[in-house]
Length: 194
Image (cartoon, rainbow, N blue to C red; front, top):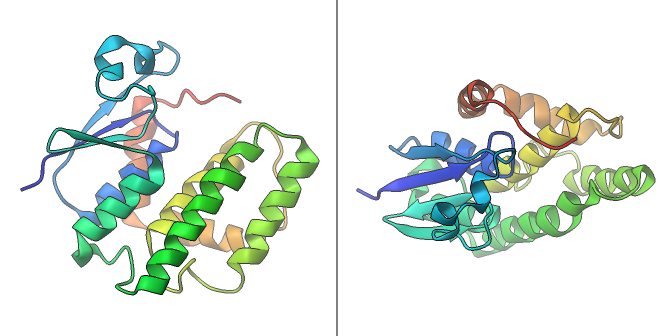
């Protein structure tokens, strides 16, 4: 049995990996780090991940970092969870979406409101009329949801009328793995910047 330990900070990017772990339904341990207490910058954690970032997923003691890397590993290591279609093109599309999420959507929150709206409208258009990013539920949906969840739950206004993403958000909020993750992380307490 593979030993899995997720270093997380509630509501941060690590939430996507936390959801995926609940989806695959295998035993795992969590270690919560406080951004406010700068626990991610302390020597014990920096010895595991010198970048001092979450998620960090220990796989039998070996650190794996970055949301896309962790999600792809879990989907391929536990194929019975069906978090990634067994098709090279679909896998490449998942990687493409997760790259778009990390390089285009994630950094946009630091830019002006007009740019935020423009980029999220592009994501909504790119998503289109499908129920799921790849046509069937996958790690790409988990990754996209986590960032959209953050956008919706941030204290500042966010672009409205993103009907495809709003529909994804509603579907995702019904998933037991999402509900379980939100319940656990809410109890730990969110410390996200505005």
